[in-house]
Length: 180
Image: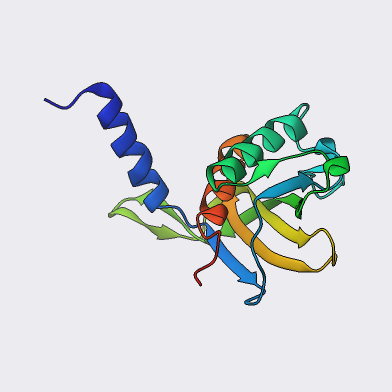
């Protein structure tokens, strides 16, 4: 018998597999990937909307926590900038509101002969969504050269920012460290 947690996990994995999220990474093939990292900039500036404000109140700290956990799972230890980190982590993100309007120019209406397409009232479909991008940069603290960049882009419904950021961080950092 399959318990509830197993079903929930299977459902979550199935949803993740259906995701349209696109992830790309690039890296310096000669880089030595280090074990300590420090966040570059303040946590409140991690994820911003297209108007350069935090996406939601408290989102910077929440996203910083998600990124910290993901980096720790990859063997990176977070240190403060004054502890001489080997890597600096810079996170950039934004989301742009979009509206898609489809007009079909016809509608199905009742006629004496049944339901047929007519020009009476055009049908319209309006869909609101957001296009989001998350970029995670790892920079060598000494040389100030970028050694790894992961980019995730996706389209999502308003209100799903937290889930999408967590998914973007997870999928992007799944490709870190790069193959040797």
